[in-house]
Image (cartoon, rainbow, N blue to C red; front, side, top):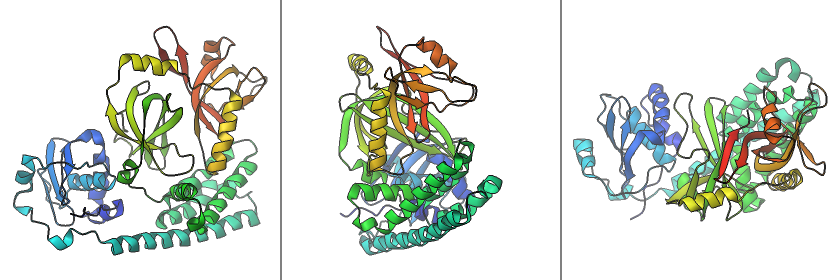
Length: 440
């Protein structure tokens, strides 16, 4: 029996009865709110959603929806949240529990045989339509980029945010949300020294992305996947989980929370000592909904990670997990991923070579914190041979990091990017194991 075609998020939101239901459904997609969730071979979805009470939800996409909540809307916000989780690949296959038939009641109908076959022609048409929209939007962006260079960058000092918001909104309409995010990050470059140089480099990167998208079909598979990801093409989580898994004892060395537009983002960086590789767990939530807390800083997870497609891609999904032995935890914490500044600099060059739009790379640097010789100048982490990287820090300056080092090399986990190194955690070891201490 052919599987039922999974909807996109856009299809799910189009099925909502009103905008209020769409807004209310998004925070309810958090995994911590759902239990007994699954999907049947013929496309039926079910789960229990915890809100002001625990509601039994059953959805037969495009046909019928049932929920024990008092709402008269169909689908209600709980059913929409279940559909969104399905679109994101978060509803696993399973055997239908006994309570599903009772929850569905008389609204459940058998699915006709002709509806069981996936409509491949319709799916191909949707892909082609999105590609055409993205292409048209990027061509408009390229004209805007040429205008910035032709007219000069001085106007950015007076109205950077308003200057960029219109074209960013146009990229959202063109179904290129990744490009919109890159555009909305441009005004922040004006806070840097020599900002025209940084801004011009970022505009050149956007032009390179437009050119790469024009030749998308001629690029190597990994680079083409990177271009799609930077533009904002969706990748189904089910497709990622179907990719080969990389099994290791994954140590969560640090987490970084940020606010990107209207979404909160959490990056959890994992280090696998056996495979000598890094992995990134990325989660999003609307403000107040709560980010994914399934993997905490310092935790060791034994299992497989499935990497997203792309050149030099770190982002993964966690697959099957196995029990973790205490001896394995101590062994993982003893296998340091620390490297000198010069080594990390070489890795960063290789990553940018594979992905010219890269913005960050995880690293544990074994180096000495060096305060500035004059007020207002940046801090650095330095190797004994003199190789150094600028520290990108907030306020206050990282004096605790210098105090912890005592003028000797220390292991510092953080993110390496175009502006320098952002320290996140100090890695301290003793006879018992390792401790991850916040830098600030």
